[in-house]
Amino acid sequence: MSTGGSSATQHQRVRCVFYGCRGSAIKPLFQKGPSIGSRMLLLCVFAFALILGHMQSPWLRGIESNLSVLATPFYWLADLPYRAKDWGGHTLRDWRSLLDENEKLREQTLILEARVEKMASLSAENTRLRQLLNSSAHLDDSVLIAELVGVSADPLRHVVVINKGRDAGVYVGQAVIDARGLVGQVIEVSVYYSRVMLITDSTHAVPVQVNRNGVRAIAEGSGLIDELQLTHLAATMDVKEGDLLVTSGLGGHFPVGYPVAVVTKVDRQPNAFMKVTARPAAQLDQTRHLLLIFREKGALPTPELEMPAAPEIAP
Amino acid sequence: MSVAEPKASGRGIIAVTLVIALWLSVIPLPDWARWARPEWVAMVLIYWVIALPHRIGIGVSFFTGLALDLVEGAPLGENALALGVVAYLALILYQRMRMYTAWQQAAIVFVLIGLNQLLCHWVQTLITKVVPTMLFLLPTLVSALLWPTVMPLLRKMRRHFLVT
Image 1: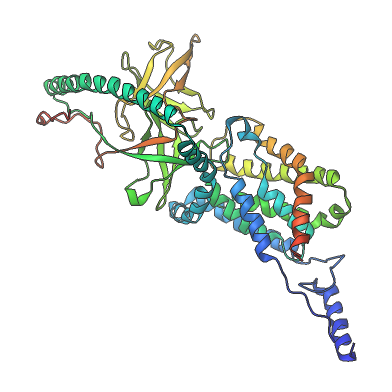
Image 2: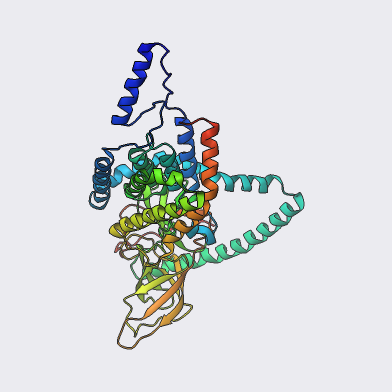
């Protein structure tokens, strides 16, 4: 070793002791971190600024939802195991089970078609009756099929990610349904993905009415995936177990008439509000295919006075 | 001849472990396991802070936390704050933790991740209404129980790829 080199090493070591070794040969045993505390303070300030920004400014929330594009590859990755299973299931299936399934699906289609036939005549009748009452019908909404690609990692947030985003015309506040009923609404849209808050999220509420008699209520999410609560219902209201709750369309957020939940328990207390719990009609924890409902912007379900021409019902 | 200064190596390996942890924290779980998802990102960060306190500290944890917020769809800053605090404590404790056996470390990891969960929960209650349940603390226990398997795995990886 030359002397120059060794003195350089010596110098390094001395620096090490004082400044903490960055990439030095000697692993520091007692690393003095004079700036740890101040860095910590800085971090707290930053984090609180972000959190406060999230609470106060819609501007920052907009940036957040744009930034969430960066998370896109993760949804794709997280969805991989399922898709691999799906692919395996499709390719490694014998033709007999496929035939069986085909048969079953054909039967199902037949039954559904029969129902739709009846539905066509019923909806025509409904339109005529509504015309007599001077109100317009909202029976057909256009829909877009989306697939669920991710579920919120946090079980306290009932939020799912779907594979349709701004490029498919999805917008914040859009209602989402599945084959059985209302699922939730879009809360965040990025280019290819959007997040949907389920109706059972503890911060979600949806205006409903009892299908049997039109009693109006608000169904609030309970934070449990299979439970909704109706709040502020007077004890004299006519709600029974087994009643179907459908969207009332009040508030203009959700389209009218989609099933939301079935009442499971009515707890009447004297001199107080009723405690009503309901089970969501949609299969919130099982569905993989969802429908996004498109409506004309600003179409509030207020009765219109002008009479529309009888719409043609597609067969 | 001067001593060749080893370059800070293995940045890629650290990044890969963090990305895998992020991926594991959004991968869909069956219903019964939803509450028990281990805090992978926090565990990996704690490991790297203990192993390389001169490289991985509060800053890296903060930005990893921001990434976790984005991926989870949490309000920006929630996990950043929690992971930053965890990294801070790990930086204070790393000399002690290096002396411990895996199970003794697990006890400290239990406390650190418990704190992480509490901070996240606290931010959530600031922003939204939260269901009153203590189940959000379950990942703490699961993470601590997994620590004696995760830590040797990460150490083996670090030694194999000579991350210093």
